[in-house]
Image (cartoon, rainbow, N blue to C red; front, side, top):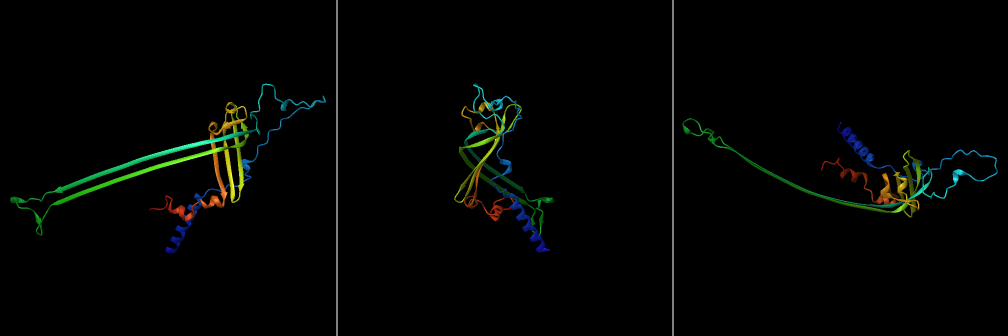
Length: 227
């Protein structure tokens, strides 16, 4: 019975540690495949002309992305800074006492020569300090595709960039929603103008794996460890 209990405990610990590990990110993910523009049906008239009204811009148009499959360049300019400090101090003091009991005639009440009396003195102190300081920054640029044009004119964008290095790959993934009027004249937009933005910047390979804790270390640093 003891052996079965230990085996069940080890299996539960291993399964819990495995569930914490994130899914491996690989290139050529179909969810981030390039978006091809939608082909519009064109009625070809036998006039002999090569003019096509669907692929021509008038003198008032620009080169901004506005259709599914168009490409837009996102300028990454992210910077966050967070600080938190807290101090907790608790103090409690209890003191209780019962004087010796007196019986008839003023004589103290005793048991085996010991008077009946009680005394208690208790003190407890607690003091805790905590602080956290975290900062992140990301700069660069990435080109993404227009995935969908919403009824209000906003554009859903999505894209990724992979860079192969000597000991692994680095990738940037970005998804979100932008407004057409936030796109600059040179077809770029700042990342802080993206609504519901999801920006991933990480790596794979030897360098990335060297910075990760092993499953046993993750267990001892997790909430499952009682100490």
